Image 1 (cartoon, protein in one colour):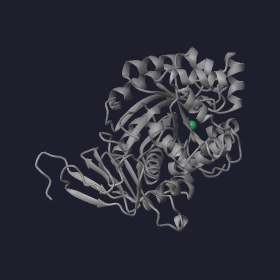
Image 2: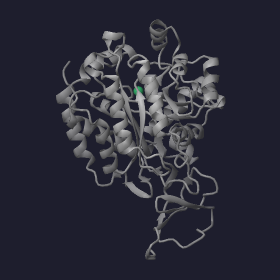
Image 3: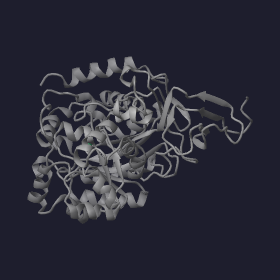
Length: 454
Ligand code: ZN
């Protein structure tokens, strides 16, 4: 049927093998960038459609939402200087090589991370970029350009480090910037790229890196700027016991008290990791509506600890998922993160307390809430048409009975189709318009030439 003049195409994703949505056994209709309606099992759409995609081989879930990453770290995966270390020694080892990053390498790293995320079923990619050495001053601009070229939704946070080892911080001075330069550039990128409206393809947040590498002034001024521009605030907090000891030694307070003092204990804030909180801190974070990005793969790799996800959710905090940087993961696969979240949280709370549906909810609706988004993360009428479709054709799924449980328990890691804002961006397991093998070759070659050796 031809598209009617002046109207968006209506696409019926018909009769999926399984779908993570209520009353949608017959699939859903996508119109323009949004989900127009869900179709109950055995029923037909309420109005004519222009196209039909037969989804009988596909398990359909909401596009996953990643809420923490460091794209540049794809260049230093499994680096011999850093493997087999906990966070602080790991960071000190890598600070010593990250100053070699070039603009070309950073662009390829961003492209690679977006593509990896997209192929794993992720439709909204958050990144926390905090490295701005000479030549890389426009890193946020590069991430926005690459997201637009690939067609993925992006939440790019303008990170920062301003407290060097000369002033009691962790990073070397060559990787830090002056507070005023950071604030001026934060305002620049907010004015250029931040779209606070529903349906936004690009949003910008502010993300001073962590208590051990920024000044309190930068934290306070960033909170003020976020109010003015209606954007989110993001930082690392509560990742390790070393951080607790550092905060007590330098500031005479625990990390959550620090957060409160600098004006960040509110619903605009979401935190990466959020592991080492006591009962009173969990209660305060929940009451304030602070979001928590749980990073299970990274937390297990660095042996940082176990996030109190269920306690935080019960206290009122949105809980989402993040892959974290590709030097502590060392992959950018969010579906793999869903499986890891299921496993580590069962170890904490028991096999009956955390289900595959909980883990999928964290990676979709929970992550969307961390980002303050009410338009993504669910398959529901009026939501953005961000979808991930997996087949169960690989050997690992053979013999599986519950398709949705199989995605998580059998280890799905590559989507067959991914739609962002109503447009297919992955078809037959390949990114549309991008040569993944060429990207692998160029990125890998540059990473080894820049960061190889000691
Ligand atoms: Zn991180």
